[in-house]
Amino acid sequence: MSSRRAEREVRRQAREQEVRRQRQRARIRWWAWRAAVGVGILAGLVAAGYWAVARPQRSGARVGDHWHARYEVVICGTRRPHLPTTPGGVHTHGDGVIHVHPETAGQAGTNANLGEFFRTAGSRFFPSSFTPTSIQLPGDRPYKNGDPCPDGRPGTLRLLVNGRSEPTMDRYVIQDGDVIRVEFGSE
Image 1 (spheres, rainbow, N blue to C red):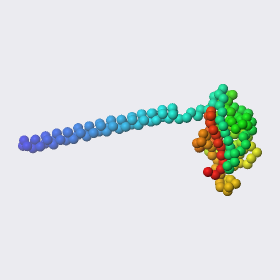
Image 2 (image 1 turned 60 degrees about the horizontal axis):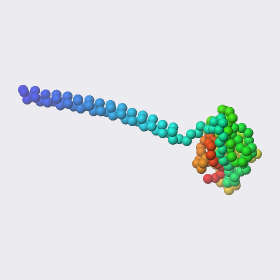
Image 3 (image 1 turned 90 degrees about the vertical axis):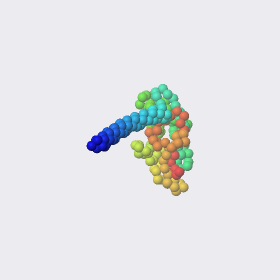
Image 4 (image 1 turned 45 degrees about the horizontal axis):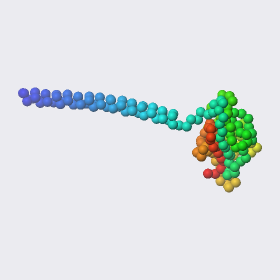
């Protein structure tokens, strides 16, 4: 009899030990899961903070600022004449330079954009929402994506700012010292 009791006792202790191991594993999994979530949240906060500090600021000029950006418009490989003198807080003197000096809050910030500059000069991007696919300069026809250039190849409208492609096109907020190139042509 005593050996049966001993066997039962050994089995009982083994079951209890297994239950303790399972509980301990469950506790470890519980803490590991929470630690992983915490690390993920912390990594997200660090990344968001870095992005907020490291990304270029595109807030635009404020009332009283006086910024300059050079620009050129190239259609099918031909540089177009500078736009004529224009009025407003985002204007040109016909010299290939965009002058940004907002006089009111309505001309400042994100309103000091490339679309506003071209509108005051009598030019337009089409459509005026999302990414424009055509441009019309004063006294000229519209140039639409896919229209052929004289070499017979289809043209595409694109904006380069400081040598880099800029997808925002007419919503691009002009920054001091920018070099802006609006071009329609084959790539």
